[in-house]
View 1 (cartoon, rainbow, N blue to C red):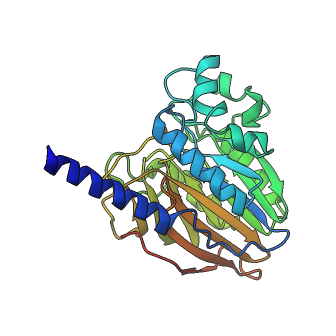
View 2 (tube, helix red, strand yellow; view 1 turned 180 degrees about the vertical axis):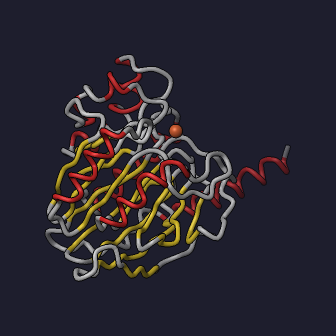
Length: 300
Ligand SMILES: [Fe+2]
């Protein structure tokens, strides 16, 4: 019993130290007038872990006031009653919502499309896929559950007509992932990757695998998996040759800041540990030709 108490006390001290060391560290530059957002997926579990990650997001929001959050799908698990929306979205993100942070959802395989696209706080405006601009950045929220010819034609047209400096696509199923449970969505990659390359998409963010991974740039495009916003598959990341940085030990969200031709990012865990950070530089003369530098701690 005494030994158990000693072990528990040591664990508690370690947790506290960890909070002190990692607590709410911000490594983003905070340029004035920059586009600032958070991204995560697979969050809508209603578990304590979802609420704890939400609290950490709010803590970081006080230092890095991001305006919006992109949701990578599996937004609400296990039903779409008003209670589900309240306990798996409205309550965990209440402080962010109260501060005017907007959420822009995409749909995962556990989502009810008809109900969620009509749910006002998800800002889908009745659309299963849609696009919007923030400063010099255009976002494309796709429905990767059903990538039918109609959606592909829409995306092609929207990408072609986009005059934005930065084009960021986000959706649920990752084109590249080293997680064991799902891994890369190869059929989807065949359809989307040529479009992304042709039209100068620089960054793609997905969920579905409940881990964090930053994939080595593929054909000039940076791919992130950020599917541990609530659900987590601890130890599921295999770290293949695709992996630049990965983290599968805790829930994670991604913070992104874009200013001019520079995009800075940091991935933060539930206890505020910075598990990845770096910069992506856009070459204005060559769409899709990017350089990426990493700074800060590696997660592996
Ligand atoms: Fe999923």
